[in-house]
Amino acid sequence: MLKPPYTRYDQLWVYNFDRTDLGKIDDPDLIGTWIEDDTAILFFHREKEALVDTICARTEAKILYQANLNYQDWEAGLDITTFTVPPLTVAPLWEAEQLPGEEGNIPIRLDPSVIFGSGFHPTTRLCLQVITNLLSAHSQEIHSMVDLGTGTGLLSLGAAKLGVQEVRAYDNNPFACSVAKKNVKLNECQEQIQVMEADLRGALPDTRVDLVVANLYKGLLLNFFENPDFWKAKYYIISGFIPSMEEELLAALPMAQLKLLERRKSETWRLWLLANKNR
Image (cartoon, rainbow, N blue to C red):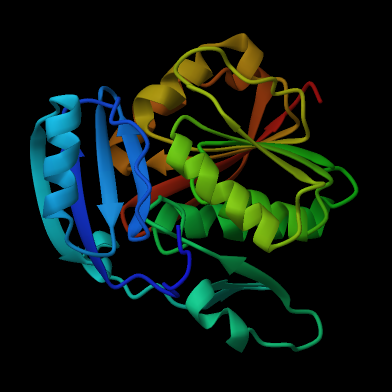
């Protein structure tokens, strides 16, 4: 996450350790620690060879890999900048002061960090577009939402800014949860959005809400589709898959209780908007 004296991301120094128990790391250049299975990935604004050597000596950890890359390279060559999905305008913190003040514009200030959900991946943008369209057409029906795999919290923020009163946002990545909580606070949405750490491969969060957003990978979507408790919401926005995955995912849907309202695509990615016939 961004903290003084840093106001934007430029160069990233990345160190992947073979364990997670590295102790407390209090360094002004630390962006965050990403826990992935049994490894820890540390992101810094500056080179940290001496600190890494100290950590390895103290914990007997080993480095699996390390890299130095430009922030744009981390973001697949994209320049993370302000964009609009009317009426929402999303600005990274380094452009937030330039947010337009036109009537009807709803601003979102975002620290994208190194977490999925900057808004520049096709599935994130598709989900945000469908959320805005759905809430425009059905605002009186949608008061609660579950965001599965929230990342930066952007989709939850979009929904809250458009009037959804209760949002529960889940992610299994502690670093993502920290970033999402920061973004919730930046946008003063603490009373609407609750961010929680949860391993979505385990217990399923309560889906008795008006809208579930699941922008996830195929295996996890299939697990959800096969669980009757997943299908308790009124509407579903499902994304995170490509055309070659659609047949298998469609076959897993309990279509007797669902209606496919919309099918969208962006580049090689797909999205479905579903309605529960029983709600």
